[in-house]
Structure formats: structure tokens, C-alpha cells
Amino acid sequence: MKLRLKSSIHVFNICKVGLNRSVNRMKAFVAGIQDICTIDYPGKISTLIFFAGCNLRCRYCFNSDFLEFSEKFLRDVEDVKDRVLRNQPLIDAIMFSGGEPLLQERPLINISVWAKDKGFSVGMETNGTKPRTLKKILNMKLLDFVAMDIKTYLEKYEDVVQVNTQIAKKVGKSVEILINSAVDHEFRTTFVPGLVDVDHIESISKMVGQDKWAWQRFRYDLGEILDKRLIGRDFSPEDFRRFESLSKQYKNVVLRC
View 1 (cartoon, one colour):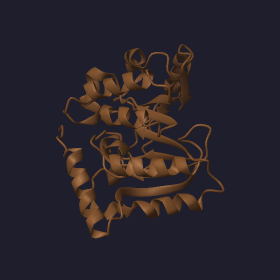
View 2 (cartoon, rainbow, N blue to C red):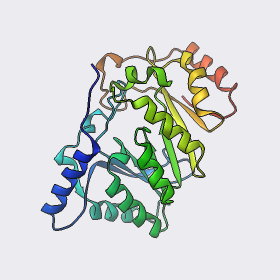
View 3 (cartoon, one colour):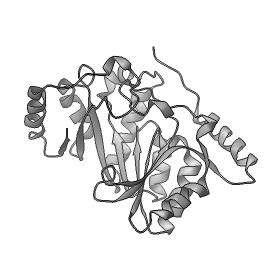
């Protein structure tokens, strides 16, 4: 079943409710904070901020427990900043993840401006479904690094993300924006047995061109998988050898399987 989700306008209205309840303290939907992360922002030690709420329902998502904009995730933005500052001696960056960070534009900009002022590099993971917001924040020069998920090739997108709101067209626009930008970025594809496979590589390659492209392995043991039918699926050793062999044909590919 494909879903139609509430617009980001609805999200901002909830944020305003939270803001009014807390005497003008801006709030954000934050599902969690990982104090120290050495993986998501390549070459940096970062604090990872998980924004709750997502406009996709990817079958293999392992963060399915915070896809909704639930009020239980509302946190003062100042509290998020305080948490980051506690890690300052150890980190040199912050990284937004999700969920989808671009659905919370105001808190995202607020924290990014603050982080840049404190001397942190700012990175963000995105699903690429909000190209206008992405372009706006890039033009503000608030991001030093962007990692964009490429779920599959555009013609099959709705089958993977289970949402039918012209998502593929928006993703294609975001890819174009990043390729033409000066910001450091990479594209990431998670390969899932029977869903996103080696047969998709050539079509996805045409989307990302020569820009850095990370191949990632599906892990059903990392969290709460949305589609329970995927639990237990894994690639065989022969499959991994095939991925490794294919990766050598693309100079822009980083294998993270």
C-alpha cells in the first residue's frame, strides 16, 4: 500500500504549538542524539542528531520507530545545542539524520547557524524529496557536507518508498542540485536482497554520474525494520564477491558492505 502523508506545513504548525507552550523557545522533533559518531560524516568526529518524522516509508528502514511527528519527540532546540556543547572537546562537526531533516526547516537552520558560529562543520543526511529547501539551505552556505540516499532508480522509486507523491521527480531534482553545487557530498544506496539489487546498479549510475557513490549493505539487525518480511534476508558470499567486482568498474564507488 502506498501512502499519502501530511505536508511539512502541518509539521511547522505543530512546531509552533510547541513553541507557544514554552515561552518562545523553539522546539524540534528529535528522536535521539548520538554523542560521538565516526562513520556518518566521513573524515569527521560528529554528534549525530536524529530528527524525527519522515515523508517516506521505505520498506527496509530501520528507524521506523520515529517516522511520525509525535509530540513525545518535541525537544527544546536550546537543549539540543547544550547536548552538542558537552561533546565539544571531542567533536569537530554535527550531522543531521532522521527521519528527514529537511522537513523541519526552521530548527534545522537555527541549529546550523549556531553550529557554524561555534566553529563546527555541519553535515546532513537527506532522502532528497525536498529540493527547494535543500537549495535554500545550500545557498545560505550552512552545510559543509551532504549525504543523499538514492533508494533505487527513479522508475522503481515508489515500489521501495511506498509513497506516491511524485517523489521520483523531486529526488531527480535534488540529485541535479547537488551535482551542480560546490558543497562536499556523496550519494548512498543501500542494497537489499530482492528489493534493491545489483541489477539496479547501471540505472542508478546514470543518475549520480561521476560523483562519489557509496554502496551500503542492508542490515536487518540494526533497528526496527518497517517491512518485517525483510528480516533475515542477506546477501550470500557469492553476492558480495559480485558487488566487489562490480564496484571496481566505477571509479566513484566506495564499497561499505
